[in-house]
Length: 335
Image (cartoon, rainbow, N blue to C red; front, side, top):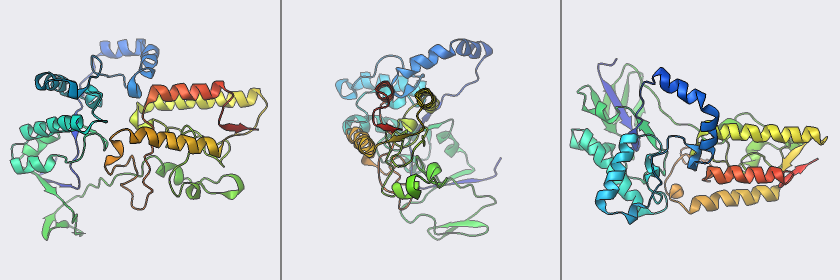
């Protein structure tokens, strides 16, 4: 409960309704009774997301305005991360992306009563090239008399004192400052462990120019090291729980294979990892994802190499992992 709330906004972002709601006991019981089957169905869905929109995705550019708006409104009412998947060309055709982005901007303008504040809240980049946000009443909060938006612009925050934040010479007195500073995605947690590989080589040095993995699971020069939902895997562009389960199942099967065949080490080969990194980037470059500065590229961390880290396409990824295992872990050196 705040008498006043001041929001210092670095970059406006897209936020679509989360549509969270209380779950009645019957719904919870029905989901749990069908849990294993739900998981299997998710494995066949794009991104492994079970809350997909009804009906297949279609091209936004193939529809007339009325039909496109009808489908977009339906997706908005549904909410959630499935919203951008309403159309299958949102992340490959800038024209389709612009139509969906402008739809969200119009929603913001329709909710926020002050036109100047509304425009400051309207993102300018392509929708979904940065991480999409989900919200519950976020834009409505700016209609409250005790909420103020400060768009920082290129100069950013000048100074923070013991009692205030100073922007463009204006002093904003505060009792509490809540920091939302972001995070070092995909690689930060791994590099913070200070992992040492063969011959004393550090993972931090190996990845100095960007992460190199095979399937996002193994790293050349680091025998018996597996990463879960790391760079080179679908991870943040899929259902994270499902992605982690798939990784853990694959790793467990690999360990059983080693045990049953009397082997001791498994290590990705440099050639397989190099080809995999090329594949991940080739897939990304066929889309609009790399067109803006996002944490998918590491752009939010000063000095971090700009490499698109997650792989697009979950069901094909699992198929590739299964094929590698079936071929006695092709691309890994097992000894």
